[in-house]
Image 1 (cartoon, rainbow, N blue to C red):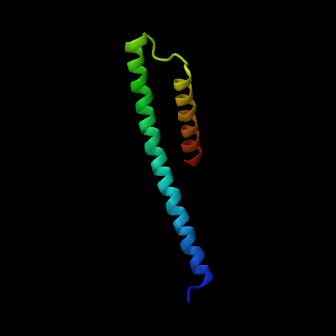
Image 2: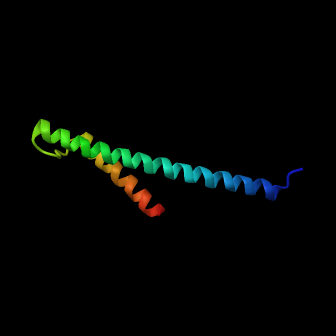
Image 3: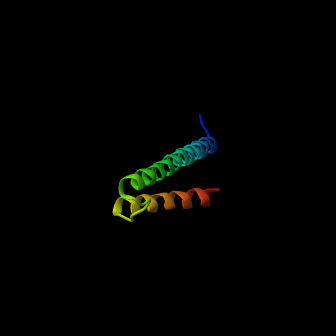
Length: 76
């Protein structure tokens, strides 16, 4: 028979592993989002003559990037 303490220990281990995996995945997503924003700025400069125009798509990309940065910074 499994003791309740043992079950809680394994549950805590599982939660910790899931937390580590989510941190790694968000870090990878942050890296790809950064690359996407930078390459989009270069493409925008070629097409429209400026790196940033503050249209809704660019603004929300910046807001998302900022929220990811805050999360990763506070997690550190």
